[in-house]
Image (cartoon, rainbow, N blue to C red; front, side):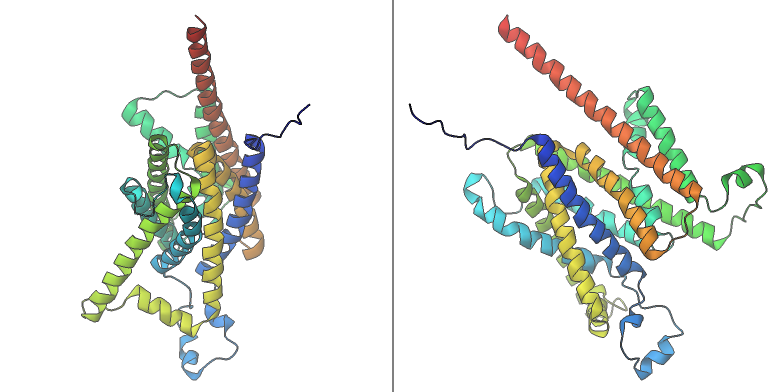
Length: 376
């Protein structure tokens, strides 16, 4: 009797593929998050083995921190683009294309526009606070749909919204909540500089979250229109557009600077900073590589399981990033702050699972209905 051959089309189970991609995303972005905070908080003067004479005066000035957001994003986009290019080129005969796809131009633009708001907010709030607020991406989406479209939510989703709101309030609270509620703490004046800076930072992060929500929705619509597009093709297109945007912006800024229309240029300042503090080159390189490897898993999850599952995985990753950030960089966190973190992630996971199950249930009902009609 002829020997039976194993099918070459057998695929890894969805659960196992999701597990491996989630673990890859966790490792990549946990290191990436550490490097992001290191770049924004390290005084690179401390990395110099010797202090030059002109550094003595600068010791009394502001610390030498990396503040060149657009250059950093350009480095990461270029790295991601370069890594995805050979994979896309290898699959050119399978419907892929090296030309820029206009369908992802707006998603790439919004993605490039979102991150500077998050980076600027780090000047006034801690990195864990930034991560926690960014984790609440589902909340503004729910409120937006309720106000404009009149969408109704079930008890689980409303409870989740309440948990997230309470959690963010607890994490933002710098004094004991009982003392605050009892009025034992004197309220700060409205013109307090620290309070105003915190409010400005939260406003910047909120803009970042809304823009991120638009980017995710746009990527989902693109994936629905072109279901055959692979993860590397999507990664290639997004980062190709981002590179174009960043090069145009940074190049135009250099030209305007050379015409003496603006006092400085971010690209020129970043290159001078790298020459003065060479250690930052290593940090930027590792940051870009970790971001690129993380993007591989992000786009794989989006193309295979949808952006909702990607949000769920990235949100749970942020919990571990907050934990590591507090340990490595020594942020002062009280027990009620940790309670707020737990409340936020409990609410987000419950909401995401409820939406995911509802979506699967609707799909199963539709498939069952189609099967019954065919049987009839």
